[in-house]
Structure formats: structure tokens, C-alpha cells
Length: 262
Image (cartoon, rainbow, N blue to C red; front, side, top):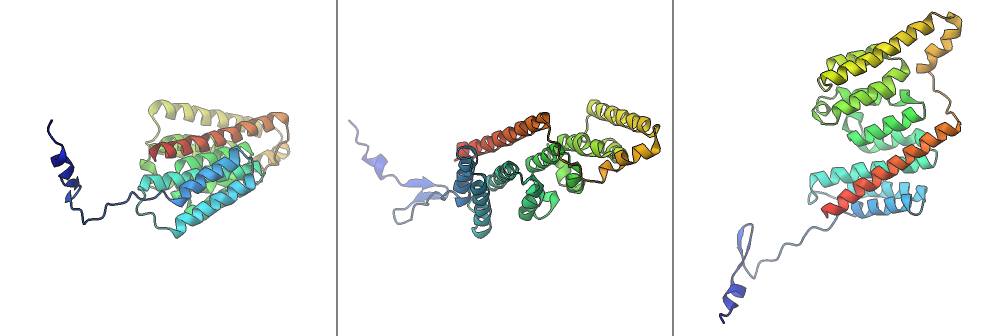
């Protein structure tokens, strides 16, 4: 039988050619500490229901990302970790009834609205609209949609429509909604017609309301400018619980994707 000694003696070949015995073997880069902290935060959130600790762990992970160079990490992985940390942090704040802090919390890490990931922006719209405070995200979403870099993202069209349905129409900003739908190429012809029909319906309802007593109508006209009180009905609480479950599912989905890549 032929000996395989020649095979074992053959030089190992790397990307730059044969690897000499005197050359050190390149070590696989260690996983970023922020990824481990993300897993810990998700575990604290969903398994232990320790929302405060989950939020604090997310903040430690963000600090880790700021303090450590991530040049060895693929750019996509770093972005995914940051987005997933926001999803977990949003859920933790909402569970502690600190949902009013969500927008300022995420902006302290991304600095400007234009840099927010689409998924994080979607969660903010969903949360504040469910809490009947869509005006809180009006300027943030508007700035994001106006940024040319964001207009090339595949999520742009869905977020623009979400903004119209969840923010602009409830606030009575019908002209702004119409301008966005007509002026954006992100809307397909069928979707554009559907959304314009919704705007037309809202405008007709607004006209009907104006036909009533002007004095009785003033509080309704000001609802877009004044914060609305959070309802306490069982139906609303049920909807809010559904929202929390959706955010939690989104957090684990993104975490699972990160684990698969490792």
C-alpha cells in the first residue's frame, strides 16, 4: 500500500500560497462581546422577565460596541447586533411602562433619525401609534423618509405606507399624506390608488365633521396637536399585549439568525 507520507509533508496552502512551518496560523477572530451580551439580554427579557436587567445589559452591549474595535466583525453582523439590541431594549422599556422613553433611548445610540434601522423605526411607529401618541414620531419618521440614502432601501415603500396609515391619517395631516404618496416612486400604482382612496375617505369624514357645530368640533381639530390620554379599556390592553408578544418574537427571530451565522 502506498504511503501517504508525501501528503502529510505537503505544505499547507492558505490564501497567500504555501504556509511555512515557521508562519503562525491565523486565529479565527473571537466573537464580539456585544453578541454574548445580546443573548444574555434576550434571555433576561423572555425567560426571566427581568426587564430592568435586560435593558441594562443592552446598554452594556452598546458601550462594548463603542469601546471595542469591530474591524474583524463583518459589517452586516455589527448592524444586526445593534438592531437586535434596540428591539430587546424597546420591549424592556415597554414592559416597564416606560414606552415614552423609547424614541430618545434609540436616538442616543444612532444620533440622528436618518440612521435608524427600518425595523427599529417600524417598532417605534407601531408602539407610539398603539399608545395613541403618533405625533411623537412625526418628525423622526419624516426625516428618515426624506433621506436619499433611505429611499433606496427595500423597506422604504412599506415604511412610507405605514407612516401614512399609522401617523399622518390619525393626526389629520391629509395634505402631507397625499404629497408623500403622489411624490414617492416607492408606491406601486395599485398601492398608490388604495392609499389615496383612504386619504380621500378621511378627508370626506373630516368635512362631515366640520359641517356640525364649530364649537363642538374644536377639541377634535386639536387632537393632532395635544397628547391623547392612554385608554384603559380591556380591548386596548389586549392589543398592547399582542404588540409586546410581536416585539418579543422579533427579538428572538433576529437573535436566532445571528446564532445561525456563527
